[in-house]
Image (cartoon, rainbow, N blue to C red):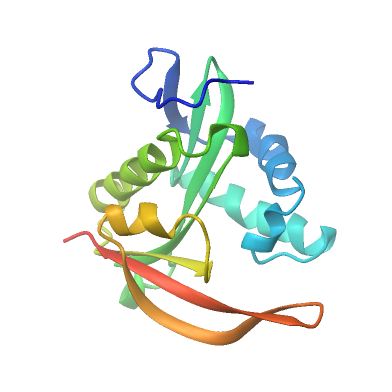
Length: 172
């Protein structure tokens, strides 16, 4: 077990552009028990599609992978819009290995993703769609994200409904 300290300033910590070799890692993180509760896919077919879309943005250097000692420990991606009228804003996704959560990895990935969105893709707004009570909410608020929209009974798992929240940050 790794010590529960912030280590993102370590020389062994790095953030690089995501590439296709990270696909298996992303799949393994999403398949961890309980992880899919926080993401849209429900089954393996939907998961395959979700991963394909996520990884597709790596072709544009719009996805980042955090590594420690060369091993991936977290990933994030911008879901860029292909239409000029709305190309100034996008959604993103982030996932961090539970072993490395609350140690600065998520903060580091989001800060780098915000910088990438603003400087490389000229984004003005960045959004994350999450379920209510997601443990990432305090981190997002500390990084200047605000609740943009809320919709009750948006996600249905079995007989239970969960509200979604869209949190946004201005990059301009």
